Length: 455
Image (tube, rainbow, N blue to C red; front, side, top):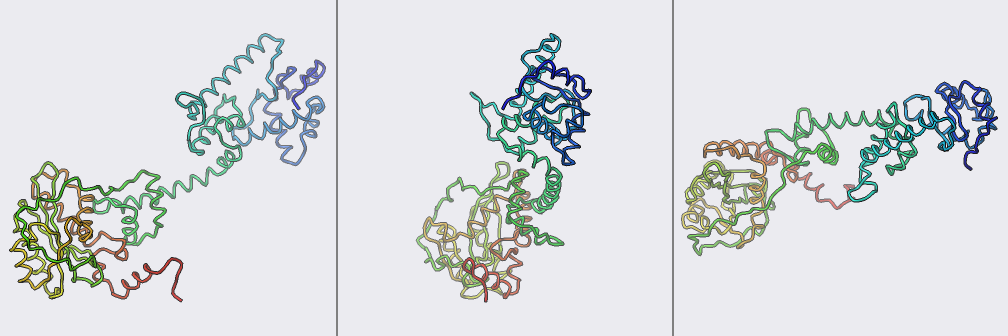
């Protein structure tokens, strides 16, 4: 039921009250003092009709529709947190002003109202290119804009319209207002946790993903225990990104000078089955940054522990640096190698050469080769190069010596402090030196079917 028109006698009755600032047949302006006293009485449990009687106004003149509207309007002002204001309009808009000055004042108010509506719609991204509609803006952002609009001293927009225009509920907005302190507290906690994540992310100057950060936190002094889902959430929240593995844009090196001396594939991808120092993987990769001379790197890693056992950097692709890599591992780790130790490579020219084959025989090692054009047969070694090129920064290196220093620093970091998820959250060297029972216990639990536990 809409507001009834006020008669001249009823308007005179209202004008006699010092709580009424302005009145017309369709509109009443109450003072801020009236609103304050009205709301205080409502909080004490009194009804709107009883309150206006106490304040000297006939409730029958206002009617039930105006009384309920008055209660809702004042409640909204209280929730907005701005205090009570004079000249707050409610009810139907005035269309029959008799006083010209009052009518001009009304029209100016309506113009200001429309200007605020347009400003809100623009600020809230309600206007889409080529049409009108609600954009995909987070509700929290809309609540913040509504809060900003209602906090203005000259605001004429009511919360009902603001929420409807933004496509959010009033209950959601009031919940947003009431939980401001809780959100601020959570934001402070998130920022504090992110600073710890950032410290782990920047450790030794090499970027890390969520798992790398998680494992680094466990190795801090004292250890920081943080759920990996929380790490991913905070990385996404603050825009922290780690490098993504990119496909190799270059073809493999030329197979020039290849012989027919191709060894059988004895490994068959059994990388971790036989334990440490039993399966060795070797390969060659290019190192290039467009500033320094092109370099080539030969490496040998342990397939079980992923530890880098030997590496040589060379400016030449001649076979000597590959042979030097094998000599390094014999010199530094020969005591841990046996006649059953297998060294696996691809079918590149260096590994099918007579010199390499003879060196492997003289070292009493067994030789194995991946199938042709099948990188999966040497996957851990390929993965090692991929991660190294993602993490190491040689963009500013201009000489061979600078590249060598950068790679030397990273290889030290890789073996000692680059923790790997599948190595019981340890670095390769820690994993090799860890008690066997701890590693086996970790592997056992990792292999349990989902939901199963030890009885």
